[in-house]
Image (tube, rainbow, N blue to C red; front, side, top):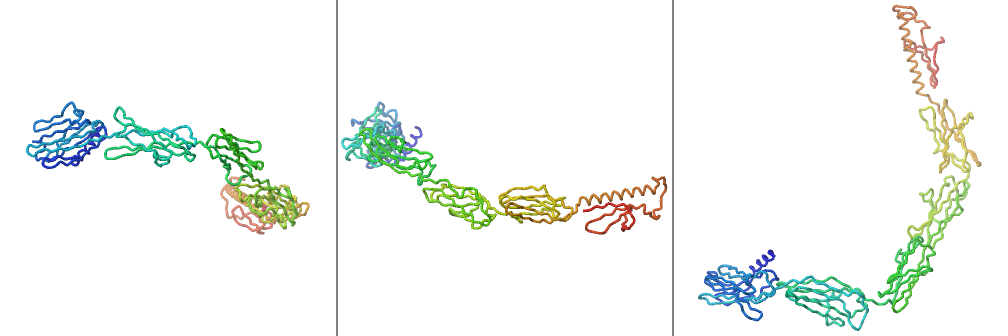
Length: 606
């Protein structure tokens, strides 16, 4: 309250110069009113010009009672300042001297409704005569938030007497607030045909006004769900304000005169497996029963009826009926709608799976699916490769490449995800065929080579591996694939040779030759060289011991320049498939040529 009083004090000080003035030397000019809210501070100024301020002046304040009796509330002269007692203002008024040529201000605290009276300021000078000014104090109170209460029950259309729509009320305002009714944002007037507005007001013990307004009107079918609300206008200092109630709507009960029935979902084409939701609704809102029926199924609803059909089939197609029953008049309204469930049967492939085609002959197959809609067929080979379009699969001259798995996919272009498919396994009958591009010799530095032979044919051929001299390999491994049979054999070649892959079935035989080259073993050669070096070292050690007399009872140093005996030499002969040269190594590491003398040697062949 202190902040509010301060605000009004500041406003009052500004108004001091404009409210009304009393001049000691000229005619009085006044503002006739001051407006404040109840329980705030009122500032009423009395303006006059005096070189000495209020000194030497006599100032009196009066107010006019409602009985027109004038009562003095304040008196001031050169020696006395007195607030008169026993008035309604005695304990709530103070005065402020504004100084030279300014005037004086009457300050009223906690303004009440009964303070709304006229105040008189009288100023007398010793030599300049007197003057007075008058101001009416206007007091306002902002009302509580307005309320609206509607009629809960429904309305029947009536062209005779108006029906009560609701009551609006606003409490504790001053001066009396005004209430205006609105329907769908359009103001209603009591002068309108079929509209009755009955206002009433009450003065509370506080002196504030409470106002009510009742609306009655002739209700028509078109008023169903119409929005009604009240606008309240009330006065505030130096203006007006407006507030509104919440909105209420009314329900007009009228009988059904027409019924509508439709498929709520799915929208568009219906197919087998869908869930169908059927709805039936009348154009009235008076209590009635709606029944949806189809063959032996029926669903009842109040105002709106819903039938849900799960996982429908073509047998769900047909006519669905909706009947509306008026519970009061027993009137019956009937409507129906047709539902068609589209279908796509499983794909049928002819001839039936699987089939065998002779090599070089014609492959022909058809794929069809019975459907209520137009279809499109695509043939795929080995699942992901498009082979052809159309219901017929045709290959003029079948080859082994023709063999495989074919899938026909039948779709409905105008209906997404509506499709079916079938599979056909095709075998091509004929003599075996060896595919050179998939056959190979995997050479390595190990002791054996891996030979691969890829054969196709139908019936599945038997595969054998043989050499040019008639030897048969029995350790071959075989793996069947979609393309044919893969046979693998490991061969340890000690010499150049030819190996044959032989494939045969009841329709013929085919062979393929593999030329295998023998190769040396690097590990064996390395071992032989190490052995020779070890023998050379051992011979050198023995020779040294012999010369020094450590063995055979001999002692002393021997002349290393003595003639060498052929029996003291150790010779190793190394032979290779690639050279005729033989190298003789002595124990002293000297290179010697081969001779007819019979030395000891190791024959190592690659």
